[in-house]
Length: 138
Image (cartoon, rainbow, N blue to C red; front, top):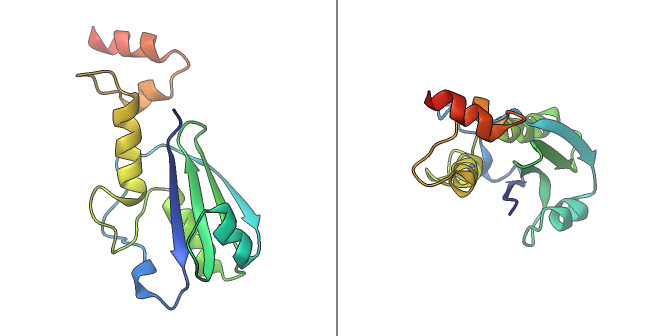
């Protein structure tokens, strides 16, 4: 089952939307292909399945496809950078540990790992994951 992480940037008047630059992304954060889609505020809310409010953008991450699609309704470069930061693994300052994009990545890895076995990032991206994991056990 595909696990999608949906992150949002609420209106810039809310201080809770700052990126936490002190909590770095995990070392094994995957490289995600980013794309940007300019849409209306209403479309940001609809496409990102957000509650009522005025949203400037969101980062929609699909770990299976290794993609991060940014829906943005602002021309402000800071808003775009904020969403790009989510794509590279940063969370909001108010995101509790285990939540946000970092929590979604940890959850995704747990769902796709075999019992008592962790998968290195190198093997996760290998064309033949099983073969890679066997070679690491030797």
